[in-house]
Amino acid sequence: MKKAFLSVLIVTAALLLFSCTLSVTDDTGSRTEAAPETSETIPATQTETGTEARTEKETATEEPSDTETETADSEEATLPGPPEIDYDVNAHLGSNRVLIDAGHGFADPGCTSDFLNGVYESQITYEMASLLANKLAEKGYEPVMLRGEDSFPSISEIRAAVAELGMFSRDDVLNENNIFDAYERTLWGNVIHRRNPVALMISLHINALPSADYVRGTELYYTVDNGCAEPSARLTAFIETKLKTAFPDTRLRTEGCVWNDSFIVTKWTEMPSVLVEMAYATNEDDAKLIFDDGWRDKYVTALAEAIDSYIGTRG
Ligand SMILES: [Zn+2]
Image 1 (cartoon, rainbow, N blue to C red):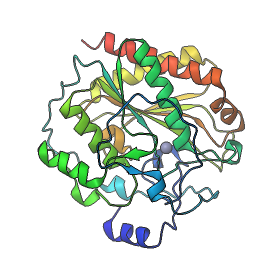
Image 2 (cartoon, rainbow, N blue to C red; image 1 turned 90 degrees about the vertical axis):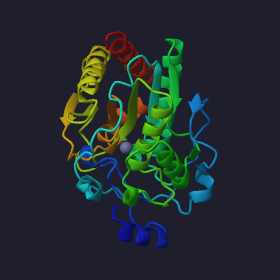
Image 3 (cartoon, rainbow, N blue to C red; image 1 turned 180 degrees about the vertical axis):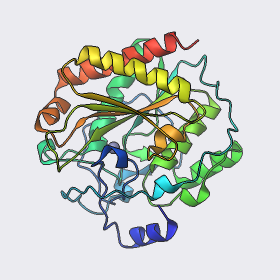
Image 4 (tube, rainbow, N blue to C red; image 1 turned 60 degrees about the vertical axis):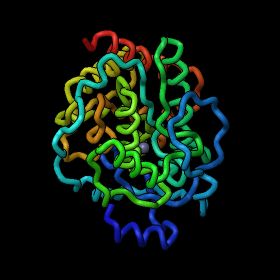
């Protein structure tokens, strides 16, 4: 988002609403300063958020609106083409660390619907990310959570790490808006990766489409033209296969996105990456599954098996 626009956003204490309404607009929407409902505590694994972590309590100013929007804010999609690849595109090989991005969080609650009874996407993604981390740990991998349940790195910490590591960054896109934006969390993921390589990054989200509440199922997104496009495609294919096997009757769509698409967390990443829109908050049947422990376990098991298969065959 543009700086001037964001200044207004901050000063007016968030009059805009963020919602992952259309999958292609996810992670590019305008943000609200409101906080999600209190989430129950899930034991987290390792979290690399640093010492200057901001907290939800410090940033929450309002209750979230229950209004849904399908308005796309495509400003982040106007970022220029990819910078020259100045990183080792093979650094992920040999790593058994799996970076898990629980979508949204803190001042950005993500989407919700009447079927979620006041629960927001950010809570669900954190819970699913924690379950996935446990599954991966059982398989001998080292899960790394990109954000904590109630903390994330400050812009100054991200800037310092980027400078220390000599990384390219779009400084004009970084904003002190108390939101761990998609670009910021991607940069932080790259910092984690450069310090100690990860095998891949998986970003978990919940979808919403209020105008078509019959739409349900999973959507997978990866980028086809960045430095790790080929392994990202293979990783995504493994996930697609495992989810199809686990949920043969569930709609599953996979899309390979080009650089100009909106999926920041799959295109700016310096490691194989995939974004998983697990289910639709706006579909009543999907919403029931989201709170079903059996479905959750089966879902993260499929993801963990796919990651295990990908890593086992990555060469
Ligand atoms: Zn989302």
